[in-house]
Length: 202
Figure 1 (cartoon, rainbow, N blue to C red):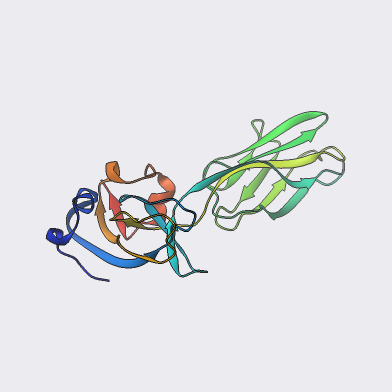
Figure 2: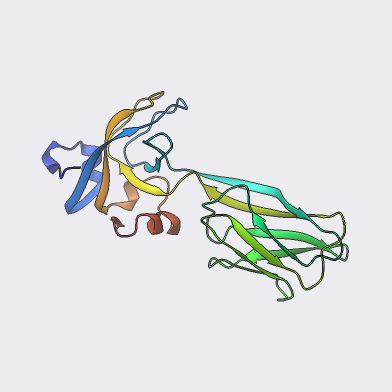
């Protein structure tokens, strides 16, 4: 890792970095899916392959968490994916023939509008616990909708990377201040949380 001079960085990199205090590293970037990457993209670190990949999110709909039996009121387990976006996790169960939805408050707590049913979701691991005031109907699926991240944001790409590369050496910003207008995707609370202590956005 090194602090490169702004004079040696590309025009795109200069548009991303704000201020004079920053650290730039050269890392291995993977574009193996055939998509070229442009400067400003947020990356996550894939520890299984020891390289960086494009940060992305995926929406999940109607994932079956469990099935009601008419008597069980408490259900727990793990969603199919971890790194769930705060505020995105909703659970739907059928109780007395009607759908009941537990919504995520953004702090891990789940509840229906009437406060009769509640639960908890751990965003990082995907662990959930559901506590229904009345048991969900027998044979009816308990489902979840949510958005998850491919990995935690770790760096910002400072140069273009060609398509179909698995370990392309590229410069990334790992510490400093970045212009959010020149970063993609739109910098949200999850990205800020992941990069807290390393990159500040203005």
